[in-house]
Image (cartoon, rainbow over all chains, first blue to last red; front, side, top):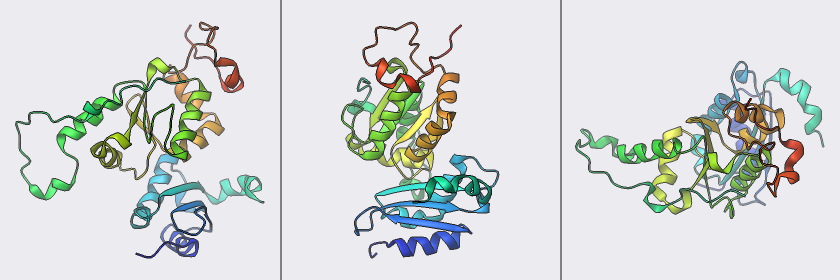
Length: 89
Length: 164
């Protein structure tokens, strides 16, 4: 399998997690092993952190095998409205 | 800060098994022995961390960050155990299957899986981690141990565990 790209991850996260907003940052310097992602999706509604992260982990099961470091921050659209100010550069 | 506890290589040791697995198709899943050893490890302290490296010398940024968070929270070393998955390949794979969680570190409090580094970090920021550790009475009682040399460093993050 070729090295994962941020664009590819962005695409599959948006598809598989019905995300309204996805931000993928490649932290690996190009080798495709380390990513930090922010995911905003209504499917996280009513789920605690553990359940949300499990949703993401399961949706990206295949990809996770070839990623060494993966950081995720996940929000519902409502939470994101309140939180996004903290994530704007 | 923490003692390197219980990272002995005998963690996963073969037990004399009286029952053979009936179906070899399940061979890829963790063995009963491994599962039993993991359950014993998880129950060995109130706060149990499976990590890469040791608390003194973490071998991964996520394990380092998690150890630092637990230290800043004031987790009582006497109620804490860390297991180095790099010392034991069976543990490294087994713990991922056991918890259905693909990454290390993994934190357990009172036998319950809490999460990995992202979750710990976010719970630390929101105050949920302090709440959880207080409820579990896993924090150092600083009022009783004023002589703790490292206490002042993280003092502003620490609420002493309430023990009336």
